[in-house]
Length: 325
Ligand code: AMP
Ligand code: MG
Image (cartoon, rainbow, N blue to C red; front, side, top):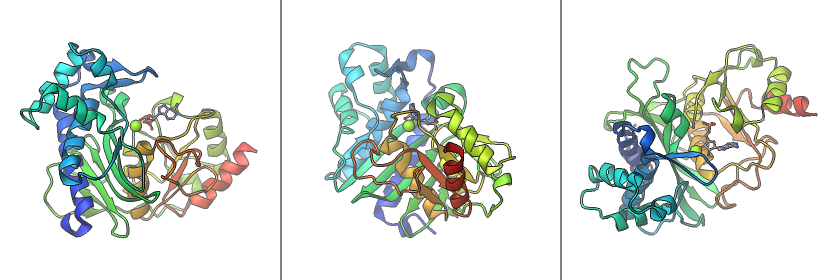
């Protein structure tokens, strides 16, 4: 399979995420390059630079399409003389020479688009904490049409899949009906197919889990693991690298129990969901409902996430029902 055969949008998404992942890897993020958002989560020059880069590339290739992205330029506009903005400009100059500060901030704010019938959604750096602490992080982009993901690409600068001979990272790319594939971050080369595991024994299931305990309800998670009879060691990773691990058969199950009231952001789920489904897996919320990406920036009609190699899906849903009642 070649990129072109996956279709125009998938090829473009894969190229954008490869470029974004290379950019993120080049940026040496130091403590001075980290700001805090209003919810106190960290945001780095890499988040802003990748969002600006992808917004510029999308604006050229698909000028009519809205972009719904995690970040906005408010923090940079509030502090025009700040070090963070200057560093973002410096990083972007390497890939988009001649872009003035005004255009740079406007590019970042292009991510304030409305999720409508057809839109792109971007998490410029998913797993910012992983980036800062030497763990996994990804760049994630998806195209949604009428509430369903049709194209996805996830740039994974630090991920090496089972059987890989190096830790050079790669890009997972999926197009609805055309499979999930793994591409080197340098681009080119034929794509390698991603397929989920054949594991059907819940006791042996390898559970992919967040490294961030605060991102899920551990009590419900532990009750589910007990009900499932799971004995295998978990696979701990930040970001949608977990989704890629399930798609590649390096983990079998991924479950996210949100804390009370939390609704998943579309950019945290869209790309990962299609990459798993096109690798033969299944994705739903905790109640077994498919995701509905037509409800705005958050998945308000869904709660949590269950992603599996398909064979284990019903067993996991049953364990959730048993563990929480
Ligand atoms: P992970 O690495 O799987 O923990 O996922 C990282 C993502 O979790 C971030 O991109 C955030 O958007 C998202 N996140 C932030 N706060 C929460 C929360 N309280 N519950 C669930 N997810 C969260
Ligand atoms: Mg995220």
